[in-house]
Length: 273
Image (tube, rainbow, N blue to C red):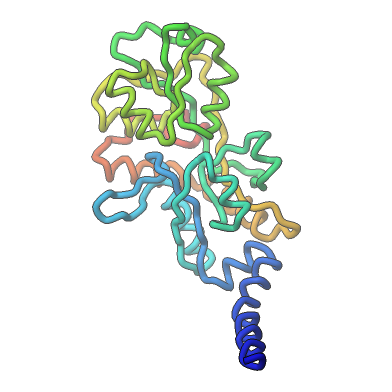
């Protein structure tokens, strides 16, 4: 029995050795050795959308992940998470990268972010039809109930910007929109590409870009590690894709897949706004 236990222990150690070696060598080595690029996905159109029938994930973030996996010659694997748990999921090595994760100062303490942005968007609001609010200050009133998605940079931004409004936090973009449709909140704050998709589906209210309108750079979060091979590769890839207009291309393709005409809608390249 003792000999058998030693053999089993040795076999298990040999099986785990490649994985441990890959993790010790960094994310790039792990991706190449496993043959998989694992991306975190959380329900939020147009970035990530899970079809309830097929359970397949689509969206701008998924398409970006597929492009980058193809560049590495590996399989792209979506790993479901939430925005609030994204940082912990990356730190726990549940997935390798999560797109459309804004590089806030708090997140930078826990994750690595490339220097080059993934793309840009602007903070907007879906408000009731006939709303006279044109600025963020005009939305910041005691009687205004605003919905945001918990754990996002929007949650932080709205909390910092607004002193009077009632801020309601939801676990996903869809839950916030459902609350708006039910009349439980008066406005939903999301970035403008997400609001375009939500409005086209809801056919209710109106999309507003309250002033001041400022471009916000979004990025992708990764685990912090000693080596920089994966981080450097992501940084260079982002610069190349942005210069080639790929974010706009993927955004337009997703809108078209939802029967939304992308013409006239601000894209993801700020220089074209």
